[in-house]
Amino acid sequence: MNHTQKFLAAAAITFIGASAASAQTIVAAWDGGQGNNAAGDTSVITSALVDSSLGTKGVSSHAWSGKSSTDGTWGTVGTPAAPDNSLGWQVKDGESQTFIIENTSGADLTLASFHFDYADVFDAMTVSLYYDSGDLTESDNTLLGSVTTSTTIGNGNNDWEDANISFAATLTDFVLANADSATFRIDISVAGTGASGLDNIAISIVPEPSSYALISGCFLMGFVALRRRSRS
Image (tube, rainbow, N blue to C red; front, side, top):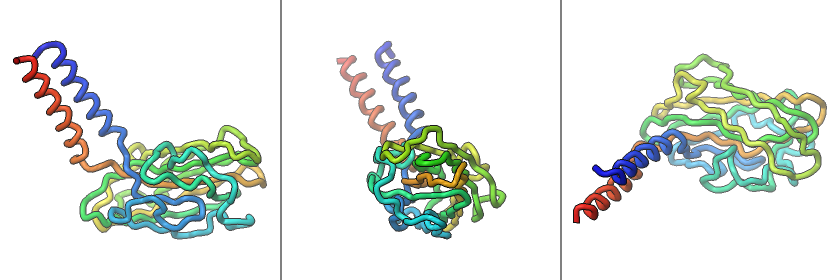
């Protein structure tokens, strides 16, 4: 094997490993005020808002028209369908929301991350994610992570901050078996009496190994072609 072939082989292994580590597929998504699974794959996951009080306690509107995240992503993930940039939730201190997902794919699913966009519109906000209950071998009400806004955007419709909380980094059991369900909850803490913003909430899974096999096959075909070319 010459130096070029060695380089290509190493590049293929590195690329495949990086893809496996970073690739995520959104299977459940909620976009400020829209119904369940606004952009998720309903053949893989069925989902529901359990306590749909988010954005309704003490505020004027569930769908916060005119204020939303504008970068077209769910957290930092841009696919599948981009969220609506005109919708967002207006939230205040003490609000919470629970999300239940059920695996209807016929196979085990590896949960990847919980994604959302959030903004300090008038007061700083902390969003805390919990594993609430379900079929995972995890204690109920387990804190999975918290994030706090860092920049006040005021009345402007500037882009909001992106958040991704990894399930693999916080859960001891992050594989949802077929027909099993899991419920997650977010709690909102706002520093003052003003409103903050929440938008583009989504749950992702790690793609099936067959996706990586396809990538590997493409590299292998290229490597074989190069080797034949060098022999001729």
